[in-house]
Image (cartoon, rainbow, N blue to C red; front, top):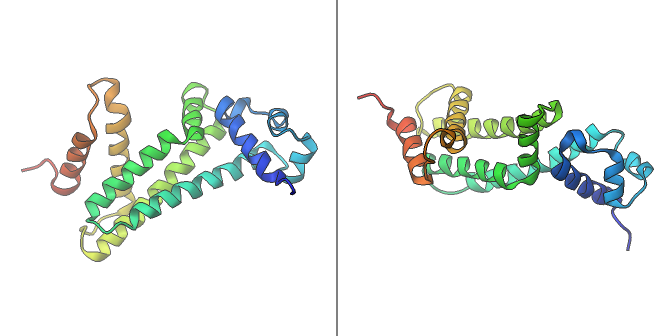
Length: 190
């Protein structure tokens, strides 16, 4: 039985990025964790950046899978949207790599960590935009700039789930959803 060395290296690199962050991860660490020589790593990946890029591609694929599963649900646009937002937040908080990257961005500001976080967010925004466009096409949502709407919806949701509780009592999921529905469907004006 042959060992898939590339998969072994990717697994070791992911573990290193999760434990130490992007900046502190070295090819030496990855080779020690994978129990392979550095030369073996370089047969598959020329640089740490290339290795990180492949790991981000895999994570994007995982997020795409989660969001596609939610988007396939047969429900109203608002419920689908709220479920998509929940799935994005859950992915961000459960996926150890993104937890570490967000921490590294906050603590050190490493450009590659920021790029990784931005990449996931951009994918989520594109996916939400496509869902909004489909809802406009089906008449569930009135015509609007879908990119602006996706940005505002995601930002509002992230603010309520991650920023609000820094200076207020945390909102439970039901309250967050109530406020999202209020602003998305009816607004605050009389």
